Image (cartoon, rainbow, N blue to C red; front, side):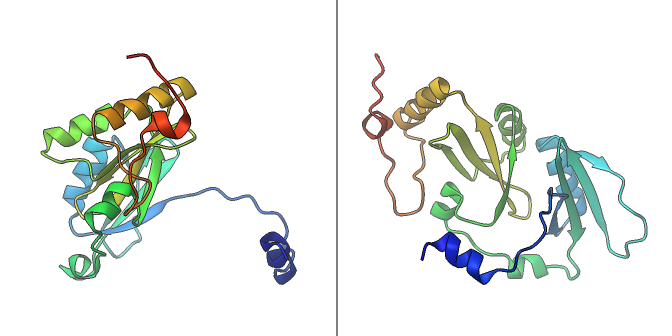
Amino acid sequence: MRHNQLLKSRTKELPARTMSMHHVCLVVSDIADTRDFYVNVLGFEEIHRPTDFVFHGAYFHNGDVEVHVVQESEPGRLSRHAPEWGGEELRTGLCHHFAVMVDSFEPFLAAMRERGLERAGGPRVRDDYVEQIYIADPDGHVIELLYQHTPEAGHARRIEIFDLGIAVPVAPGHHVLDPRAKYGVHYAG
């Protein structure tokens, strides 16, 4: 039996429901450091947070993305319980993260450079011409930034990052394939 048929046979029919993501909530160690990162690096606007909460936090908004942050309940608890991702996991995005589509990577990378921060992972151009890079906030929460290329620009970018030696593999333990060989794309030059 095919997976979809098996799944359907085991699940109760539910009425159709439309959902949209409302927010992502992150536990942070320092609201001020987090505010600086989300406002001044990622370009979020801090928005009103209901006043009836009994714990510290902040709400941020940018486009269709809303991020809520709350202060950890016990100082140091976050660092004791946070997952420790290996370098290859971070480079390839094989870790807990949330993703946002952006118009350009440069404003984010420039703001990070000004603060002495580096990209955590990427770049990689997927088969659908979406380029991925990964950054981390002050508490190590990973954020994937996505940029949609046209097919022509996506092919060219794949070759560019491969030739620069900065392309990352699809997952830890895999090799980066030369896009000219993988896709049969031949460019003069």
